[in-house]
Length: 277
Image 1 (tube, rainbow, N blue to C red):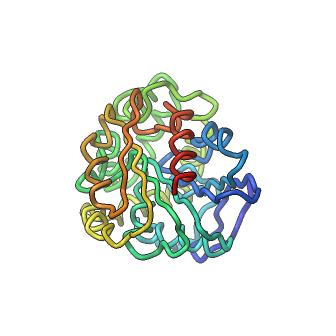
Image 2: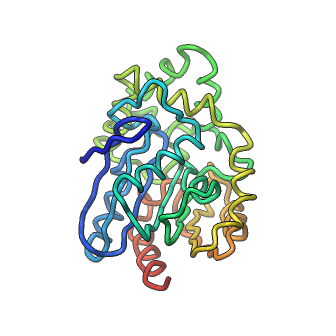
């Protein structure tokens, strides 16, 4: 992985290089860049695919102690990243964490040509679902998040409804999930960063963001999972309606982590959307 230093600290990212349309993928809570491995493999021929490791618990490099890691702060981090690499006409793609919405909603998308929203935090659904609410509540009690994380060392517990059972319809390979969880399990500064996000993001953040999406006048695609029990099925259509040039495509047989459950369909829809717009 490569590194770049921003105002908030040093972030890691993967970059396939190339001269094709630029796609920037964002990660989520306890979800690292390898979430997008199959999608990137399918799109790398003809596209420049960049995956940013957002500091949400699966990152390996701690942020600066004074970094703003609230949702708006992380949205500014994404915008700083695009500036630092001087990326233009970007297709910004988010899943799980709702930061791609915030970049567009808060006027930070000057470098964006398109927006793609996969199942993620939206509207009133923050913290999202049972796993999100459980993690959010643990963040309010000193030491509770650390203790809750220890249960994830036991592979058999990872598919429970309060862990990754509602995140993906199919089990995530153990080596992939081990790598996602290792930073938060083993490093206090990484947990500190995650707790900053959990403790400083307002419950109404995404309601406000949705109201501001009307200002994003570029093509937008909402790829949603109607079977998801964590990211509300109806919110995909609501996001598409909120975006002036929004379009909804529902992807079957998937939960929140659509790139894990349906990577080929995800890649096909992205390729078609970019070619058409």
